[in-house]
Image (tube, rainbow, N blue to C red):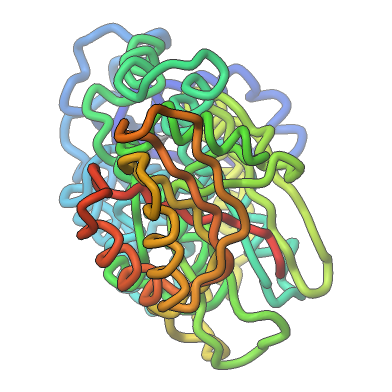
Length: 436
Ligand code: HSE
């Protein structure tokens, strides 16, 4: 059977998982592909610490350049972490004509445009299934299964750590810090969970999904990103009373029935999701993405977005595709730009309903003042909750607001925050209606 030589750069958790399952399911892969995927070289700065798998010492090296220079390596897998070295490695591999498989969302979010342009110029395919939502096959679905569709919308829970934290806050009543510590102790959150918490891990994945769906490489500076760091137990509780769950949601959508030249919304932020929507039931570290295509209608993808085995499953699916691409050259090099769309909608033009939680002095006239400001900005109130309190105490006042633009909200919140009776910075969260 013809062997396909694979070089793995980065032998950490995912690299070990890829090696483990390539060898463990070797027979099945051979039967299915009619080719043998053989790891011929592994590069990692640390080749001495024992792993749970033991590749022959002779294939281990410390310098990724050896993978580039080795004629036996036909496909390289980039699992190094970071951006600078992976960028050099991937570009060097493309230059040398080696097919690239990468799981690196930050690399693609930042340098996707140039990497794919270079890959197309050199006619070298790049595969990146593991770069968004781990084991959930959303990249192949967008590239292949939905090729006939204008994508109307994608709504994704695509960061497992923040979903775990919000789930624990909801189900066990934990505070944010407590839930984060638990996520770290369970090994879900990184030691430095900054990108998980501030929304940027999900944003990197959203950039990749939006770029594939709309045919232009989305620039990180053009999207809106908020994290979950300011969500409190009170917000979770009020949202539940109102019939919602709070989720860190990636929202990617084009205007309804627009098929050319319309701007695309790409945003990641904590969001009130109606309890009746299936995404409200996605809990713990799980990811899910609801995709609405104009031909297929509603679809849903669900599974593990991180972890050794789920991510290895996605990487190996790319290796299988790479092996087949070596046999039968293909015209698609990973990302296919086209000119039907081409820009992101500025967040100032995005219109959604809102949740507003204020801390106010309970005194006559406060609600009238606040509703007066909202009315000046033409923002309608759909419901109000204020727990009973003694006069002059500070109480939460929660308002659900009808559709408003960010501009209307900014003006209203500026005036509301300046009122004497408002004692803490207002909490403002978007509500998703899933209308498409
Ligand atoms: N840290 C990510 C998450 C997994 O929690 O979903 C890798 O992107």
